[in-house]
Length: 258
Ligand code: T3D
Image (cartoon, rainbow, N blue to C red; front, top):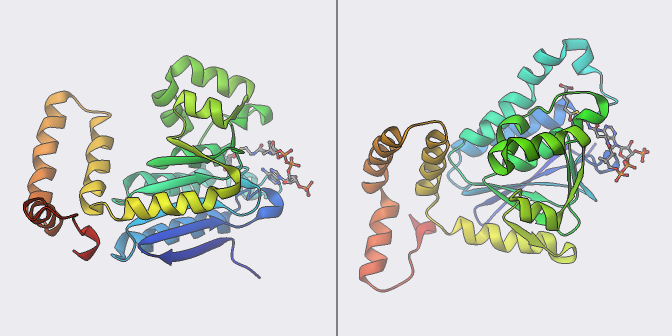
C-alpha cells in the first residue's frame, strides 16, 4: 500500500505530499504522525534546506477524516494533543523555511496547515475554508492564532462563522498567501520558488523565523535583545562569511556550498 505521506528530497528541497487523494487528503492519524515524523527527521538533516507541504490530486487537505473515529475514541482534546498540536508546533518551531503549496481545497485543519507555513503559495484553483462551524466545531490546529493575526479578529470571526469559501484572488487580497500561480504549472512554479529559497542562507532564515515568532508576543525591547542574541550566532557562522566574501569579490554568494 502506498504511503499516506510521500517524501521527495532533491536539490535541498524536501517535498512532503499528503497522499489520500480520494478523500481530498483528509487527515487520519497515520498522515498526521507521518508528517510529524518527517519534520523531526528533516530538522536534523542538513541536506534538507527547505520543506514544501502539498497535497496529491485535486485537494490540499480536507481536514480531519470524518470517517475516522479516533477523536471520538480518545476524546477530542487528547486526540488534538497527540496529532495536530505537535505537528503545527513543529511546523512553527523548526528552524527551516516551510512552504505550504496549496494545490486545491484546504478545509478545517487543512486550512490551518495551509496557514502554518512560513510562505504560502496557492494555485489559482485553491479554496480555503474555515469549515469547522459547518459541523459545529471550533477552529483548531492553530487557526485561532494565525487567522486573526492575518486578517484581524472580525474578519476571522466572519470567515469562521459562515465557513465562507475563500478563492485564490480573495486569499491574496486578505494576505492568506504570498503568491498565486496558474493551476496548470503550479507544482513546477512551486519547485522553482522553493529552489530559489533553498539557495538563500537557510541557517540565517531559520533564526529569522525564530526571532519573528518570538517578536510576535514580545515587547520592542525584548525583540531588540533577541535580535542581538541571534545576530551573535549567525555573525560567527559560515553563511555570513560566505556572504561577506561574495560581496567583496563581487560575485553571487554560494550559500549551498557552506
Ligand atoms: O478529530 C479531531 O481531533 C478534531 C479535529 C478536527 C479538525 C477538522 O479538520 S474538523 C473539519 C473536518 N473537515 C470537514 O468538515 C470538511 C468536509 N468536507 C467538505 O466540506 C467538502 O468535501 C470540501 C468542501 C472539503 C470539498 O468539497 P468538494 O465538493 O470539492 O468535494 P467532495 O465531493 O465533498 O469530496 C470528495 C471526496 O472526499 C468525497 O468522497 P466520495 O464521495 O468521492 O467517496 C468526500 O466524502 C471525501 N471527503 C472530503 N472531505 C472529507 C472526506 N472524507 C472524509 N473526511 C473529510 N474531511
